[in-house]
Image (cartoon, rainbow, N blue to C red; front, side):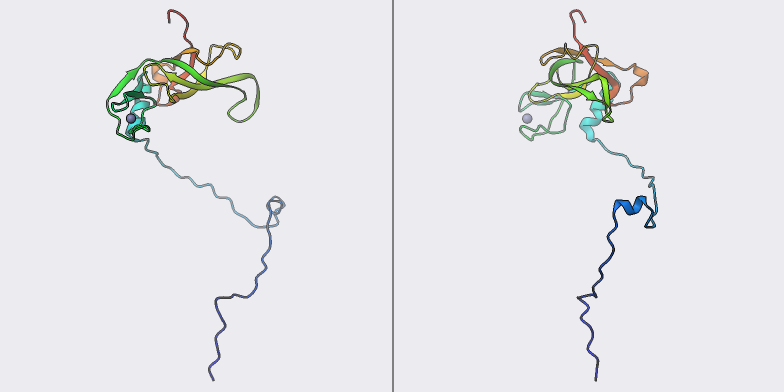
Length: 179
Ligand SMILES: [Zn+2]
């Protein structure tokens, strides 16, 4: 008589062993460490690439949405109001207005610091301010001086140090008369 096969859909009970972080530190288990060397590049798309190229040349660029009659910066390939394509590049001034800011007593690595970092969002002159702008550092001003509505101007890195990055602008300083 043919033997009936066991039901393979229900394997025998296997309780396993719970492993926690403590087991790793106490070397109760064998483990291996592998550092992958993965190289990749990230395409920013046509709008942002041109914007960064502009920064390298010391220019803040924007694009038009003709339908909404607005200049957008940082630029994008479509207008988020009407979803139509943007077209036509505009060179904007490197001045603007602080529309929000923060006084941070933590550095980028979350270490406590004595002198606060001033950071916030600037609406660039010539671009529609609502609800746009880009985030950057502020300098040459104190935490008591900074305020919403303050006029500011970009302080650029020397041309030979620029690399097509938002940090080609070092920070924004107060725009005082005659500058
Ligand atoms: Zn639009």
